[in-house]
Length: 271
Image: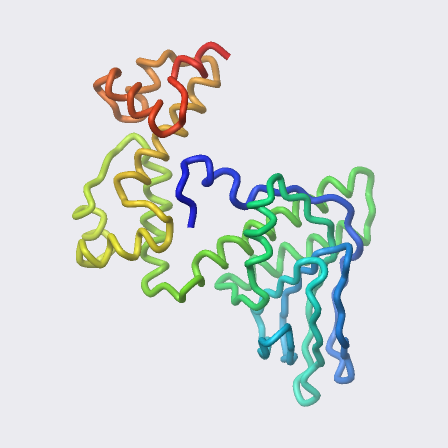
């Protein structure tokens, strides 16, 4: 889990380079791959129906509708379709461009087998990806890369939610969404726990498992990054940015901003 403020922005920061292929594979009982290890591209795959059986290193698993598979470049895997219920799937091969070594390591730690909770939405993105890839309209690669980034974001969120199989993850996710939308309001741990219908002690443990931070520290980070964006927009002074993010004491705001962001708020005001 991240333990520095900047990790929230850089841990999974990556771009997409060359795209090798986008394929929608229809059910085929004799589909099989043996010891595939793509040395150039990452592989991202969504199962939409049927089953397949995979071996990846020491892991063996069976896919079903909603299975999201991710294989970093060079990771060897073998698989075959279930003969009684052959699978159909979307797959894309692409070059991942992490911004840091930490980002590369973070992506390498994902998968290989996750389960999406919103199959219809993810399937719709893959369908649009295939349409753009096949249609090849002017500027199509910008849209293709954009959709792949959206799918990678879904991959990261699914990985975080399912890491450790955290109980009540959906409740914590609802709280996180609310905090991001209401960055100008500060909530106590007891208030957040009550919203999540959990005891305060249980809520603290689950919240830290999901985010790496205490509820108070997480809220302060959101408010500081929001204040930074306001200052960068050019339309706010330090005082008005502090007020907009819920701080009445501008001096306390400035001290907290420097402690969490690393520079004083006036630095961004003067850029």
